[in-house]
Amino acid sequence: MHMTTLISGKFERAIYKHVPASSTEFKPDNGGSNQVNGLQVSQASSASGSVSESAVSAAAVNIAPDVRGDKQCAEQLICITGTVSGSTVTYELQSTSSQSLGWMAVGFGDRMANTPMVVMWPNINGSMTLSQRQAPGAVMPTPVASPTSVATPATRRSTLTGSQPVLAFTITGSATQETLIWAFSTARPSSAADSPLKKHDAAGRVTLDLTRTLTSINGTIVSSPFDPDPPLLPYQKMIIAHAVVATFGFLFLLPGGVLLARYTRTISSKWFTGHWVLQAALAGPVIIVGCALGIVPSQQLGIHLSTRHQILGVVLLVLYFVQCVVGALIHFVKVPFKTRFGRPPQNYCHAILGLAILALAFYQIRIGFRDEWPIQTGRLPVPKAVYIVWVVWLVAFSVLYFGGLGYLPRQWRQERESAKAME
Image (cartoon, rainbow, N blue to C red):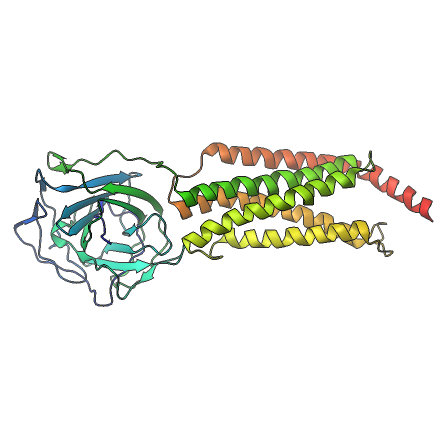
């Protein structure tokens, strides 16, 4: 596997880093012009570990006509350039942010889980640190002692001075097209390669076509058109299906059953039939399918109950089945004991638990489209219209439910008359 060069204009965000155990800080010395991969660069010699700023100086770059590679820039934060020379690929990460750079990272894959990553950052003493890392999911990547492909700092292609620093590395590889994930952070770690990393400020995904011939204008490499919303991958389509089905079950069928009971129990003896059909017969299978659609991509991503959304999803599923059991007991098992309000305690538990499930469901849906989607896919956030629909339905359901509480006096009167008739 080879790694793509990332070029950053400014170091603004940091990325999880991973460095072999033998890696140290690199402090190259200033040097003259050198020909590297067809690029004429004025840089210093490189060493293993971190590189000094004096050695990683700004340089004029002239692209040879036969150099293959590609460049992509994303979100006005980072530009990534990859150039090919035989079996070696040089990747440059350039910070283009207006904020100060902490760390930048690039991973060779389309998701965070189990993707080999190269994390780089400049140090206060003028050196540069490279760390190769990997993570089982959406957690901080940890250093890999013996990576399959070893990344080497490209000090002659790195620039630590100026407002748009560039961190570069080389790695063996032969891919003609490379899908990469990237991350950017403004929190700078210590110079040690195994330093803990603070969560990135932004992340995303790009694809470099390394078969292209690089071109430059006034010494600047021209980037390929950036597609902020590339075609969906199979696991991403399954995540969307999970969101649609689970939302339909938790936010429409369950609330529908609640509102049906709230508004019809005082005018029809058949209200319970409609209530359980919506709550169990229809919502049950939909919710189970929706959860299964979420489990499959999580397994593919190697993420097992490691995020708030996933943990809350399991809690909601368990509470839903408990609620169904409580509802069945209330209807089919009559308990003679009643509270001072004239109703059995399980009736109140059923109502309170039902409202708690709906509140958690609304919250769960929100963190799903707001947090989980961009983190697990590296794609753009969902359209603002999704949030607007969520707010409108939350307000509408709240108004309808609490408005329906006006029927409680009539309901209690009917229940007292029914109890007296049975005495």
